[in-house]
Image (cartoon, rainbow, N blue to C red; front, side, top):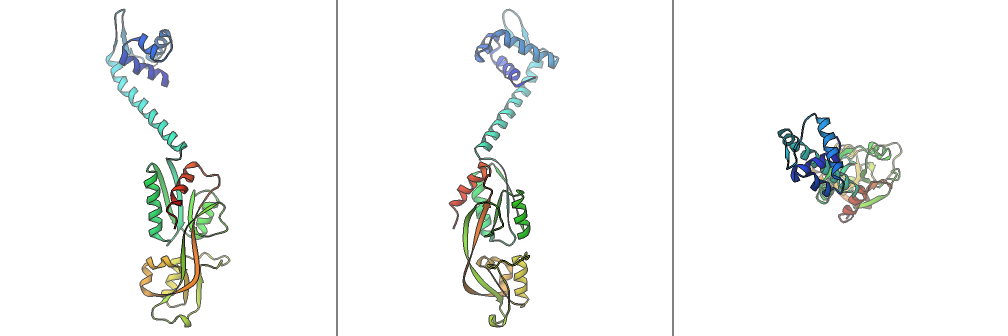
Length: 258
């Protein structure tokens, strides 16, 4: 059984004429007759009753017709899915981002992608910094959202720039506190998470310098803040040789970059 045989069968069930079906497919009547015979032999049933005056579909043929149409519909759907993938309008996209990121921005970006390409399946998850870098560089992630990082292999899109702010407990004096962490500094062999540094500030161990989106954190209610003259930039990283679907997403997100 092949697709052509099913196509011939469906057409013949409508025309009930070997001559007309042959004309529809621009082949000989003999070729149509042979293909229908082959299909009947494979199924072990008669699909049509033929005599010199007319062609009629059998009850078995009517039963098979329902399934034949369903098969062709699934094939057509599969072709459409493949064509959409080739155009970069469908497929699976794996996105990773830092834990305790700017959740408002993350939600906005994901919503923008889904709105522009509703057929895309988004797989997204928050990771620790070291995990995020490793997964992206090993191509386990298609897109990575994190603060500027030179160890990521791929081009990038600037999404947003944040002021860096000093955070410390409300009941302490900034002048008396040691600096625990500054996100603008590359610490060797250090994989610090925002939540960890904020908790230390809440425990009055010192102050930390982090992006202004920390104001969204539940820890912020325990903290005071002071501005700095520093900024930090959030980037979307992607692979140079990425599929068209990724470049379509980049085009969408360029409109939302701040």
